[in-house]
Length: 346
Image (cartoon, rainbow, N blue to C red; front, side, top):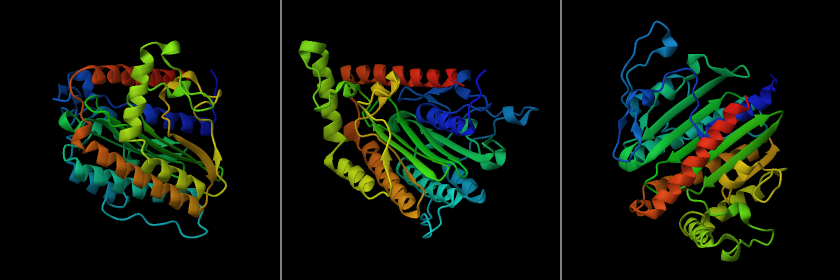
């Protein structure tokens, strides 16, 4: 069996968080007949309580979201309503950087909870720092939530590894075309690695774009070319707007010492990455400086705010028919593949 380096293990942990909830020993109530909500998703917000002689197999009563936020505050994390504190000039400590990101991310999740009242914590998929789970010897906090039914939020993962990783992953249910949101910051050896993707829900053949920005037409793809073109147009019109593009470009331009990692069109990407990576995905590395940390925190907050605006806009809800069906097939297929690929490599 091949032994993975600690850094690679942490990156794999982040990759798992990007496409699937992390299971670390607690039983999931969805395997025991969870209620199916009106949105077609299993509702595990009220799992049956279980008292087991092994505490890891016990499930306590689900707290309200207000109680959940208070619990986080009591653990030493700033409450969701408190503004994030900027990194002091010259303080490039990884622990301080992740702490600032965690504070900001807690506020972001609190804002989402305020705007989506149906959002509820998933205690069987959540782990507080005092639960004792660690990665590379660092405390791990994973706060999971969802909002089945009309709100159509399938999964929110608020993940933090002290001094190493800050990650927010949001997946939407099949009843809207609102993009998934993946934001991840990983710190290693004085470098900050940042990934952000506003991921399309329907396949638009972005991976087939050539060096000149052109896509194959019906002479190559047949009628599918029109389907893919329509998916790209919908995404560009509703989500991948000039506002978002300018925000991403302007932020990256002012970062210090930034280098870009392989993106769409790069032969170094895996086949799975080619078909799932969004056209506006940002994958960069940079020195761990106070300016870079502040800029990345600001970008994460703004993009999450944009996602929240889309998620609460009823115009993005699907009408019954082909769009939701084709989107569901693509969305489900590649999320499952990503999950399986990750599990097979460790």
